[in-house]
Structures are given as C-alpha cells and as structure tokens.
Length: 329
Image (cartoon, rainbow, N blue to C red; front, side, top):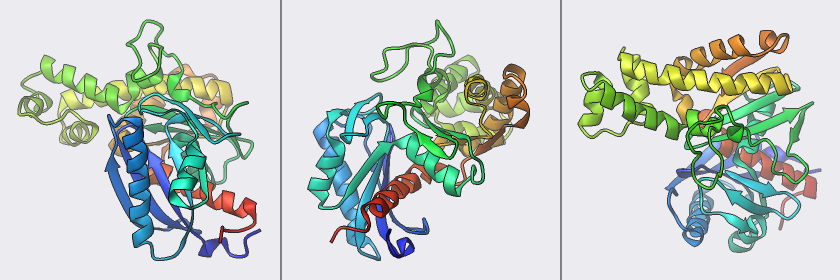
C-alpha cells in the first residue's frame, strides 16, 4: 500500500463526445490545474495527439510531481488489454489506449469508460456516498452509464458493460448517433444532442417564443441557452426540458426495475438544467417503475457536476498506483 495517497498527484482526463477536460488532482480529490480541448470531429491520430498535448499542459503547470494518469473515455473498453474497442461519438476503434498513453507520456496510465469513472467518483465521494448500490448517467453529447453494485464497479465480462445510454426506449425511434447501429436508444432521445434537435424543431414551430427568436438570431439551441430561457419563463424552452426530462424518466424507470439501486445520479453538462429536468424525470420514473424500488430510490444531480468524469478518472489512477504499491520512479 502507498504510505500517503493524499500526497500523490495524478492527472484525470475526461473525454466526452465534444470536449476533453484534464486536471491535476491530489489524493484528497482536490483539483488544482485544468486544461480543456475541443475534440469533436477529430480523426483518430489527431485525437490521440490532442489528448497527449492536454495532459502535458497540466503536467507542466502542476504544483506537484505527477505520478500517473487516469483516462475516462466514452468507449467500450477491453479491461484486460487496456484497449479502446469502439466509441460511438469519437474516432476510436481497437486502440491500445492504455499502453499507447503510457508510452507517449512516460507515466503509468489507467483507462476505463468515462461513465464508469464518473460513477466511481460519485459513489465514493459524491452524491451516492454511503449507498451500496448506485447508478450514474452522464448526459452530454451522448449518454453514458456506470453501475456500482454491492460497492463494486460492475464492468461486465469483458469490461464493456453498463452502456445504459444504448438501452432502447422507443422501438421505432430516431436512429442513434455516431457508430451505434440502433435506433430509439435513450441517447438518441434524451442526450444533449437530442435536446438541441428538439430545441431547433420547437423554435421553428414557435417562432414568436423567446427560444424561436434566439435561434432565428443565430444562437445555438444548446442546453445552456434552453436552460437560460426556461428559467426566464419561456414556455417553449420549458417544454423542451420537460420532454427530455420525461424521456430520461423512462430510462431511469428501466434502471430502477432492473437494478433496484438506492441512488440514481445524473451528471454531465445537460444537468445544468437541474430541477427543470429532474422534476419531470422523477415524475415519469414514479409513474412507470415498480414498487418497492420506485418508492425508495433517490434521483439526484452529481456532486462533481460536469467534472465527475475527470475526478473519477483521477480516482482510477490513484487506485492503480495504490494497487501497484506506489508510484513509478
């Protein structure tokens, strides 16, 4: 065991479908330095180079010596080999990610699915602390899922489990995005991408609404805009968030019925809408899920917010270093 993990410094890297966030994180999960990069649409080699560049930026500015790097990536992972098998929203396929990053950075590297990383952070230190069974959904460009069952992160037989964003909630729904071959996935109807699509359609149908005018003026129909207008009382924007929240509630009801968790944690950038999404999601879950699970489960926002994946990735690195008996020389 490491004598003093609190003194250990690592870099946590959260790769989403749109952007990357890297941060210097200490053993108490304090974040000291951050680097951000836009990664949407990058080819595989450019993506990998951007990841390395962001980590090196944090390492150069770090207050302490960095001893390892943890990566949370939106991808199915072969844990045995550290391979990124396939990402839905990024150009990653059959990449020996763990070994490649360790070689390029000269640091021990640890990798897991981004939502698994977020689930680990929230279960141990965040909104699900104290629970034995928790589920985390990260809602951004897509929807990731992480399961902690009986206090253990569940990855499935090959490390590719808990792809909860790709449960089908609408048999004849819209095609899912990126490399997913399915249609009607929760991600296809309730992600940040789906929210933007619904906002654009709603703006066209209600041009005199605040949302309609904002989009006509060239503003991007993103989660922050819709949330801002909804808080200002715009009915069109409120309707979009209510619809997305209800769709999330359908997915959550399935999760409650299958896993009977104590807590469902919702994180990611879309959850900046807070109760405007949570309220409809809870109502829909209560209307659809079975007792006794529906009556006891808590549906809450992530404590670490949009940084849950980064903090969780750092936790992976800290765990990995601890398991090795200390940091590399």
